Image (tube, rainbow, N blue to C red; front, side, top):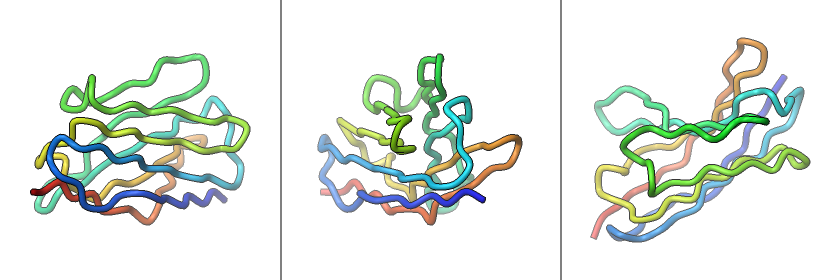
Length: 115
């Protein structure tokens, strides 16, 4: 069983920055893909980006150059550094890990970008 606990998020003005963190417990390996999804009101959940060992992080086109995913393999933690935030980044952000074909999700954390 895998448990994901997110922290961070909140309200920020356009152009600002936020950092999300996700702590994972359970049977996770460095080769498992860990990452972030988001879901805006009235929209489908979409991939923000993910990371696994021996590979570069991948990102959605909409966040490339602004968001950075990093992972601490010793602590089973993944972080999402979000810079130059835009109003369209407003969403609930979910941590995700795919462990041997099974997706596990965090509880979600709200990110609101507004002046």
